[in-house]
Length: 189
Length: 87
Figure 1 (cartoon, rainbow over the protein chains, first blue to last red):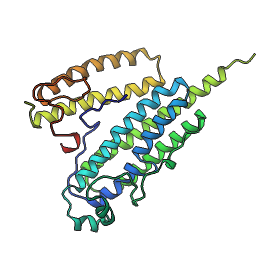
Figure 2: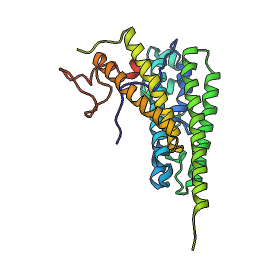
Figure 3: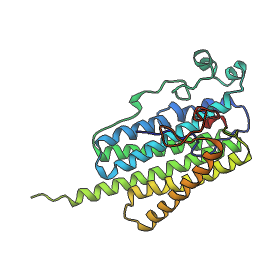
Figure 4: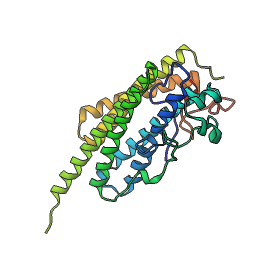
């Protein structure tokens, strides 16, 4: 089971109301390589993976929910004081008429999240390679997001998230090596 | 009565986040390096520090966890704002 903790993993501060940036950040909320996809991908794959790597997928999947909450906090803080006119100027007019300022699992272009973003192949190497690719794609997205803002407070939180993708990718690569080593040990009689 | 966020709230929260960062890093590291005794020693040492820091935070600002993982004073403190995205 999971227990909620009433704190963020890392502080999220923003220095201005910026619905334009909020719209871009939604990519990491409900986009293909976003935090929701990541959390659901790992926590679903783990049921059919070898025991040696279940702990890692459980822990990284759980950390992804903490990142999802950080992204939600950024979007919330960047839009809470925006007028409908400011939201429309930022390209969030269609979002406003459907959701007001509520968050929604969609990408930066407004496309709703879909399970077809994530795969579970039942083949440990195939699944872990997908996970490594997902972390690298998320890392790249965070870089593009950092490039899109001059808000140093926001950049600080985004740099933390970019760094976490690098660590997760490294751990998944180690998991692949652990499974390969295990495979090499198998004895057939 | 739980205190509202002040300067000390942010200081204690950051100290807790710093300890938790060490712990999440060691957790993922140990998931793929389970035989590193020094890392396990460091993990256990920080887990203890973390417990003490969380207790100090909760005494002033209310429970961090629920479903029985934190205590409550009267009235029920868990439902009180601020929530993490509000600070």
